[in-house]
Length: 335
Ligand code: WQD
Image (tube, rainbow, N blue to C red; front, side):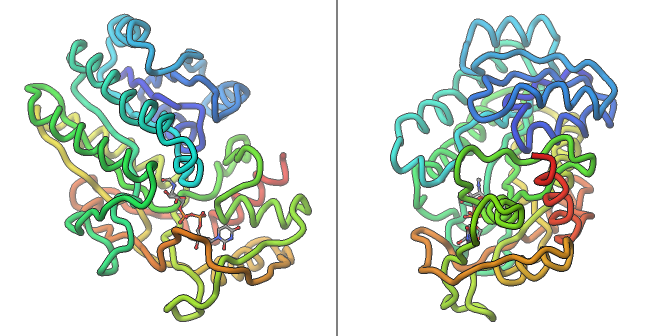
């Protein structure tokens, strides 16, 4: 299996996955409309991998374009990243999210079926669990009613993918439920590029340390956790990228109509205050912060049960929170 379509391949997780695909001997084909990524990422990817990666500037929902691409390149696998992913924005623009994240997936899967593509890896999220009852969260945990249109699209996508796969003779697919992706490639040539004011913690921290933001606001410190701040499972984006290659290899070894979900996290929870301390230790930077009110919609604590990823994919995270924060800071300094 060589040619792999990577939708959203110029994005944060997509670009890091393209690097790992080349490292593992695959030929990634990027389709990205650059609505939430930068064209220069393609040149950076060629620089990191020393190759000339095929890429198309196009909306992945363009059905005729998609069908032709899958045929012309004899694509054997798809990794689907292209999606809108901002929880807050999804509340303001639900139809944009349902169109791009759900209708778009249906278009893609129809083209995949027609081209008899065998392997499909889907970018899902721990958001599908909502506030977990038990920790760590395993794949058997119930998915709760989504608390945002974004979360609802990921839940719907998993159902659509599962039903399509079960009905197919050839297709094997897997939904990877990411926890909190952070960090950057050690080369500092690619990393997270938030547009406008970052919603996520790590880019806000690095922009504050760089003097771009005056100070960090910690969203609440009265939660029922050891230090009162929320707990998350922060996973290095390079480890997350490698999990996609492992998932592709797993899929290629299955007979058709096999569907799985898999948590991709470190299995360790870190509070906001612990992340701030770790950032200071990893970079030597001061980090002014204040405590603000809780952020609406935040869950108290979540971190991954990662046994299944180890058993099914032979994958586990290797990089530490310290590594991720040091890499994130090295990347921030190039911006
Ligand atoms: C982490 C913690 C904040 C910013 C989101 C999406 C989720 C997934 C990953 C796509 C929380 C606190 C943050 C700040 C803070 N994306 N925080 N000050 O919300 O866990 O997950 O990204 O799948 O769907 O919801 O990540 O980084 O926004 O927040 O105190 O300036 O940091 O309150 O406790 P989150 P986050």
